[in-house]
Amino acid sequence: MVTSIADIPSEIIEFILIELDPLDVSSFAQTSRRYRTLVYHSPDSHLWRSLYLTQPFDDPRECITPLLHPVPPESVDWKTSLQDIMRARSVADNPMLCKPTETERVLRTLLNMAQHVPPLPSPASSSVSLNLLWLAAILRSGALLSDTLWPATPTEAQLRARLHAYFGLAPRDAHRTSKVASRGYVYDMRHYKFDNDFGPYMTDGSGRVNWVHVQAIHHTLSMHLTDLAEDEEYVYAIYPMSLPYCQPIVPPDLDLSVEKDWAGVEGLWNLAFCFIDHRELLLYNNFSHASDSDPLDPAVFGDPDFREVYRVIPVNFRVVSTDPDSTGRNRGRINFVGEVRDDLTMIGHIELTPDDQVRWHWVSGEDGQAIWSCDGIQVGGVRSRFGILGAWTTVFHDQHDPMGPLWLHKVVDKSEEVPFLDEED
Image (tube, rainbow, N blue to C red; front, side, top):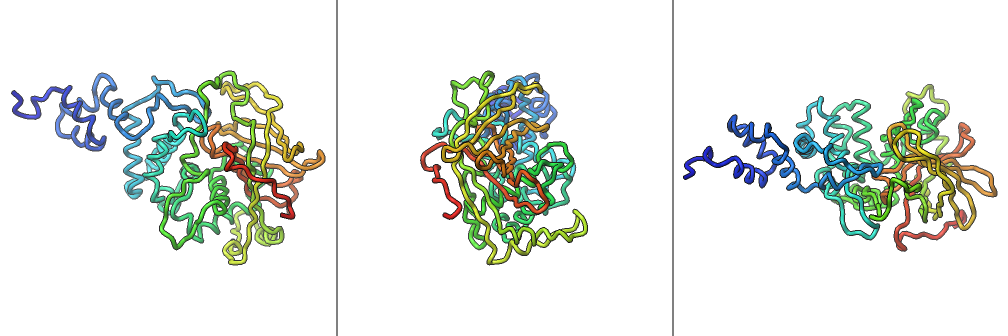
């Protein structure tokens, strides 16, 4: 006969614990040495695996990495992973709980959730990653995405901007000051140099992605895709540059170990880009400034008369060749061409950056003459519908050349097709 909780067999205790929130399990473990041992020092991972799998997360054994490799089941640390996720959940709910020493770990945990998801079998699939749904819910307030909570290290700033780009639009993105700041960053010519190949990369020549730049590009383009009214109640916008679109699309019959077009290049894409009046661009960049550290005055982007042009061009891409991978990452270089209205106008390639991001680079022009140079980064998993965010400028890279942001995303259904827009249109 059971007369106290101490008489209940450990197997029954575990069965009960699996039904609880992990934070409640942690509290229970503090009640006695026996239960602490049961929770934290069990000889196997049964309890923590069961706890993890009862949460609204994807089973990590069914997920793939951002570069479309399967997650080895033996690599899953159920206890540490769930503890990190629960801590990240608490911090996302109340960022003031975050200790300065754990900010980076919290951000990496959330990014890991966004990057490791099950693939979709087709664009028409109605299944959505549980990880992405969970992240959209806990980050909805945007508090953890704010860069004003506390001074961030350079690494933390990059992680937060990357998470923000994956997430989509947070409440503060509707504020006029945020819109002005993003455009101010994107149209600052000092962020485009030979050291970063005139793209959203670090200016130290490392080739690593500058996610602060990518997030500013994301925000700038989003202003043309969603209603960012500051005076309206915030509603999380689900659109092609938000979390649900980060999930990669990998047909079950596709063998990525032998597939040359591992990035899913071939097909119809929409190339969207923005630009502003060249005189305003030069005026904003006031070439009389003393140094790269002098701030520019972005007031022009807050002027009611300010106009930014947004255009979309349909492009058919096809792979012309591939180069073998020499890095051991099993993702070789893809060489492609793009056709607009049956004219060959683009030539480019796809390869991995030193920090394992998928980089697209191409040049385009008319009559065989290259004029424009474009560079961007895949956001979300490879083959995801999110697409590529980047920047365009000229191939000449002269000091006063025009430039602006771009977004390239694959057309997966008829509703996304757009007609070619002539300059005079």
